[in-house]
Length: 158
Image (tube, rainbow, N blue to C red; front, side):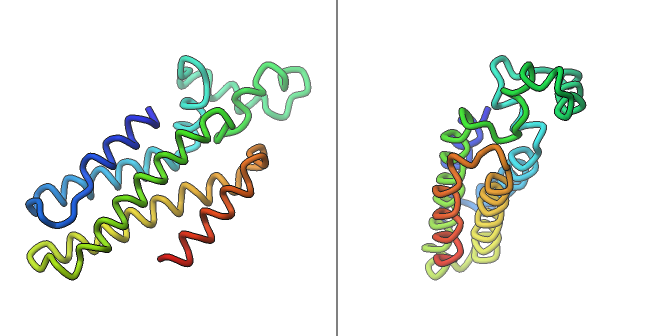
């Protein structure tokens, strides 16, 4: 699922040479990706084999503090599990691709200028939200250096 989201963000990103409708479609995709990707339940499902079901998500959360069930739910205890990390970083890369494409095209596209500005800010916000959620995850400390570097880079380029 994360790979699909990354692919759809990259494939619909626009530089303003497409129609205003294409830019609006991309904006809707960005909003959906932000809602989906920043939802811990989504990441929890994406990081497990087979995805899991809504009922099992609830039971894994309620057992997180239980010493008897801690080992059985260890693969699901983190909403941003390490095996999902590369896919999430690919999604961040594609969001930043959308951001940079819009940012570089703003001065050239007058008819879609408001939409490109919105694409630029929505892509940036979604990438930053996802990176901050990854950074906040205590069980993802193996990747903390990478995440910190990406956040600092994003903030200095924005």
